[in-house]
Length: 243
Image (tube, rainbow, N blue to C red; front, side, top):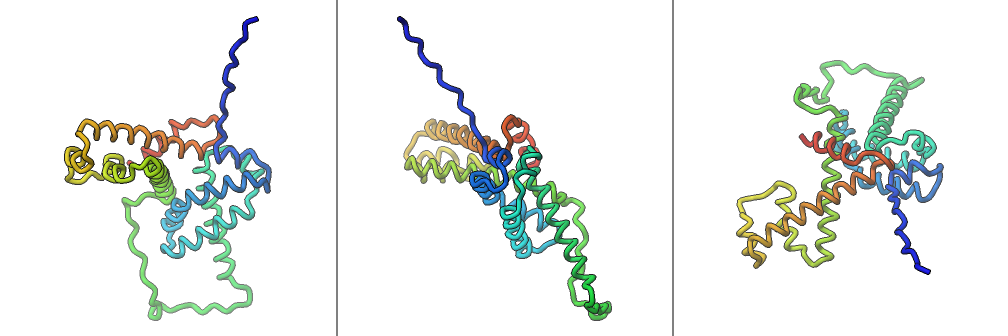
């Protein structure tokens, strides 16, 4: 009797965002996944809040408040119905948060029985409003641009960790400019001499780093998409907002 070799079973990769979107409210795994995403994508929210008129310190305070509310009160059932990209979901959530903050501020200014004294122009010592920069991106575009920068930074950090584990931290730091586009006056030949490698080996090392970097960027983006969403489409969009 001839035995038939077993075929390997297919591997299904569940992304962080899929884990959140597929879970019921209060699910521990979903809350962990959501917390991971919120920690990684903190800076885009700070950027959005700053672009809506808040100073840096206030933007960071509001960002902490926003994520605290999101993690404490978020109805994962609503997330399940959304089934969209985490980027789009997070932007929608922070816009709702901003609107809610404005409503509360207006309500506080109306203030019930509190007496409001109108400030005369002669006593107004607050700084004037600067003219709007006509070339500035919208808060939404700035959010997406910072999102793209965060994805790239995350991938670069992961690559640095991998290279350190392989004992190649010094080589990585010297070759990193060819990943980020920040190459200075030093040539690859000079780097090769510093590393005591031939120039061809340096070119191969850069090629391998670029290939791995692209894979890590793709992996970072994948984690923010629901299963079945086009990773290439999202990558293309993020490249476009870097402009």
